Image 1: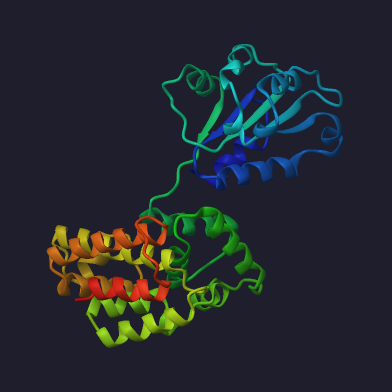
Image 2 (image 1 turned 90 degrees about the horizontal axis):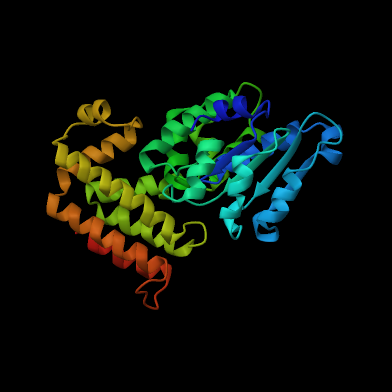
Length: 330
């Protein structure tokens, strides 16, 4: 979804209905803040209403939307957490005959069933925005575009670090970038050092170092890093480490199946641009057979479930990590 296009569309609210839907809340928070910042004081007093789905009924929303503007030509009604509304189908009649002087903006933080009559009507009547989560391989490009929209420059490794450590949670990414901006000098670009300092990454023990050790099957390096993680479990959450390793070995499996063996092939045929990451991927392709990669991915999936409380045994995070990595790096 294009952030600039959203802002352009919301600059002048003239449509009777705007509908944001889907599990990715970042775009909804962005739209909500953008709209709120642009509401004039004169309109805010009488013609700007914010309602919440869990505290409102559809009848109340319709009642507010049917009101006549008091201080200007239009009124704005914003409904947050619309997925919590009960009997949403009661909105059908209003949608078929919306008040022309009202802009109703709804944020529905769930996937919708487009086969249902009410959602068919909403999508037909509204200026609609589907807010989908990004796939892992889309995050780096999104970060580049987002930073460009903010006018902030960056180096390649900083994008890799943000991608690996914060993943596809766009709200966390945006918060991190905001914090990074506060610490930048005028015209200064975001570097890998800035990201490491912000997130608290020790370069000798970060997930890239662990991936490198696993890629080369360097047991001594892997054990040293795991021992470090065991001492600092709070700073190195198990679920985050497992997620990063799962993505790494999944990437290696894809490269193996495509017949990619060299760094040049990986660089030209994938989204990877970080030289260290490309080197580790090529190394893992050479050192792991297809059977070993399938086993590694299965093991990581099993331990991911354990880290989230499923089929879990009473073990410390450090012990779980040692056991898991011991099975992967054979």
